[in-house]
Amino acid sequence: MSILVVGGHERMEKDYLEMGKKLGFKTKVCTKKANKLASSIGNPDAVVILTSTVSHKICNIVEMKAKKQSIPIFRKKSSSKSAFTECLEEINKELKA
Image 1 (spheres, rainbow, N blue to C red):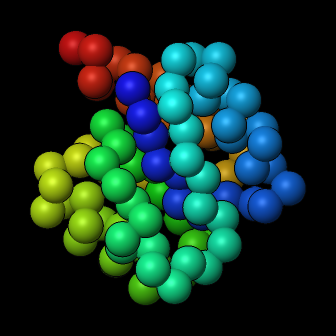
Image 2 (spheres, helix red, strand yellow):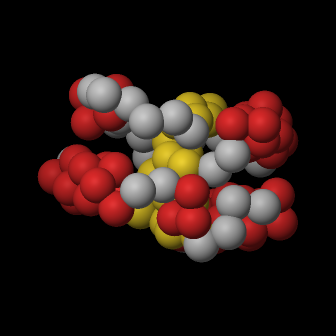
């Protein structure tokens, strides 16, 4: 399974990748403003938006693209390790159910 993480802190990008790998996810992280974010989304199994560190504009772009492709969206206000782990567990439950 693959997931796209939008937002979060640049210094934690490696942590997000490692945590995703531990739970069997192929993880792509976009922490910076991407000019062509809509085209770089690809076709993940789920999208995680860490809302405290991302603009409304980017949230809207990602949500619109994900909805068009029927990709589930998971939102967390915090970008901490524990919040991200919690979100990964939610994804596991929902996608494997």
